[in-house]
Length: 75
Image (cartoon, rainbow, N blue to C red; front, top):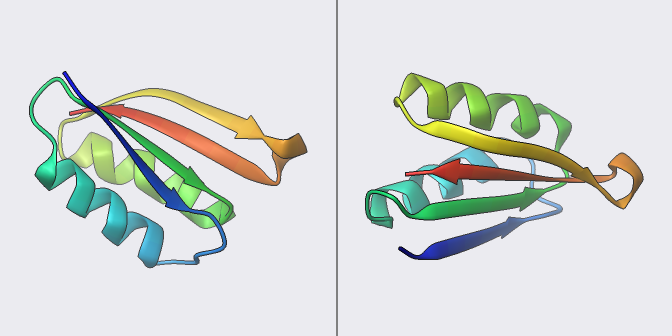
């Protein structure tokens, strides 16, 4: 089981979602994909997209006093 980290801090839509999808395609079943970002809309869009793909969103965490976020997804 591997952990892939995607850093899309400072990127706006649709870049974070596109990068997240790319990483999820590369990941093996059971892998953990961690997305770090700053764009508020992506924080909502990424979990919705993951659920639509039938993937489990493990955690959505605010960092840096809400300026950044981190989403953990199980492939």
